[in-house]
Each structure stands twice: as structure tokens, then as C-alpha cells.
Amino acid sequence: MKILSVMGSPHKNGNTAALLSAYLKGVIEANPEAEINELYLDEMNIRPCRGCFTCQTGGIENCAVKDDMSGVYGNIVDTDVIIYATPIYTFSMSAQMKAFADRTFAVAWQLRNKKIVSLAVYGNPSAEVSGVLGYQEYMKKLCQFAGMKYLHGYNASSGLTPVEKNPKVLDDVYKLGSSLTT
Image 1: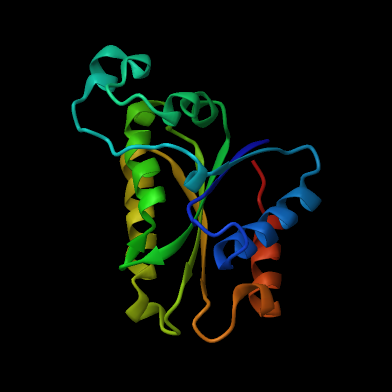
Image 2: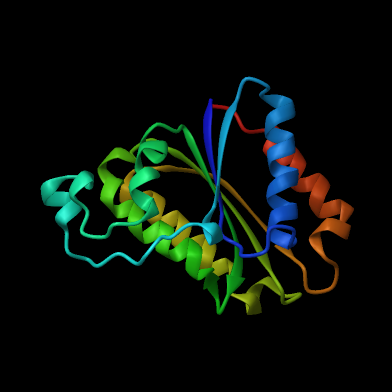
């Protein structure tokens, strides 16, 4: 099983990182043969999509935007599972994750049947107020559009307790990771 782990938080040791780490620990322990390729979006130069459709008419190698995404497209196409891990900022995913998600349009026709996992951390104690539920709906609609399979999502609040200090959240997401199969 090939997995592409996409970290959309600018904080390498923050709440989203702790959630993703616990999930991946479960994946690795249940699937020792899994190949995991990790992207840390904040260290990459991924510019916004220009909506020019060059990728759809001339191929992804002709994308009008020249940045680090050109080296990522092959990983996206070659993977079985994509894990999106993001904090919720202003009722949606981080800007880093949004740029990444928009740019996957270049390979949308090659995403069919890819499996998607969505992990999100929000700061408000209430999921209803935080925007995380709208984000999860976005992910489901993205999967529907591209013919991908939405496997599961996990949302964690860091509003009262940081993720790394919340044993219930860490255990829940670990178990969810260990349930991942192809």
C-alpha cells in the first residue's frame, strides 16, 4: 500500500502534527509493508492554481505554474491513499492545504478510485462553530467530483486540551489509522 501523507499545518510539532503522527503510527503498525511518502506543505513552494486549464489541454508537464507541485504530481498518481491533515483556519483548511487541493485539479482524471482520509484540528471546543464540519463536507464533495473514495475523517478539538495531551483523541485516531487497508 502506498500512502501520501499531506501535512497542511505550518507547525511541525503542533496539534495537527500530533494527530497525523498518531494516525500514521496506527497505519504502520497494522501495515508494516506500507510505503509512506510525507509532504510538509509549509516547506514547499506551491502557488495557487491560475485556472488556465493548461494542465487539462496540454498535460500536467505543461502546467503554467512552475513550482514544487511539478515534483508532487507523480507521487499523487502513484499512491493508493492520500491523507489530508490540516488545521481549520477561518472555517476551512489552511492556505497551504487549499493551494495543494486546488492544484490536484491537474491530475483530477487520475485520482479516480484513490482513497482519501481527512484529519482536521480545530481550536474552538464546538465542532459546529469551528467550521470543521463544512471542511469535511468539502472533502466529501471533492472526492465525489474526482471519483475518489472518502474512507474516513477525524476531527479533533484543541480548544480545551492540546491534541498531544489528549489520550482519548490519540487513541481514537491511532485505532482509525490501524483500520486502514487497501
